[in-house]
Length: 249
Ligand SMILES: NC(=O)c1ccc[n+]([C@@H]2O[C@H](COP(=O)([O-])OP(=O)(O)OC[C@H]3O[C@@H](n4cnc5c(N)ncnc54)[C@H](OP(=O)(O)O)[C@@H]3O)[C@@H](O)[C@H]2O)c1
Image 1: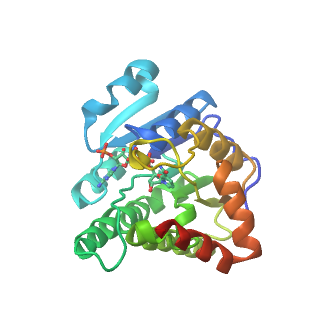
Image 2: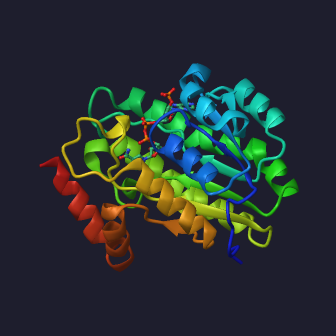
């Protein structure tokens, strides 16, 4: 059963990739909505200075490269009171399956977007169970619902995140742990820099996502484009595939 009324009030979160973009906005939104503390994961602790000076000891900076097993282990050892895990860290390189960069790009996408998420969640699950009620928030993408061939390799890993989210949800059914899949469209962060398309803000994504958590929603379409894609996907998944293919031109 989904958890209803899962408010951030008084909760403790760990957000990967919290130093910029959507992850930073989520960390801020959680704190503004009453979370007690956020463990802010970043590959570069210095990049968290801004958050730390604003929120003082409610932000606990942790060095966290999700491809480094030792850093995951240290993070889990530190963050023993966590009950919200936000798997946000991600990378995007352009390209599909037949360019010469494909194999390298695919490996990077898999290492961060998939393995990083799986390993961090796997390492933290006992903590989340101890601290229930809990939530696992996985940031996928609309491109995880239909492959977007201009970013085909990235899309494939976001589809994997979608599938992992469903699997985690099923395995944790009845455990009082809300498992959310989040499917943003284009958002105005460094990741989407140079993409000439209308974008929503990371702040909007964070606001809608935390609101959705409060209502125990499992599938979240947190911005203008994703709301439409979400509806299209539910009605006609083949149509989404065809529409995304058109971006190839
Ligand atoms: N922007 C969009 O249009 C969009 C749309 C749909 C989904 N998303 C997803 O939203 C999430 C956040 O993306 P964003 O738009 O905020 O992008 P962003 O501004 O590029 O931020 C990405 C974050 O991930 C971190 N990161 C990258 N590799 C990492 C690693 N190995 N270990 C730990 N952290 C790592 C980055 O840290 P560094 O600063 O150290 O690089 C940064 O904090 C991603 O999962 C992305 O796929 C974004």
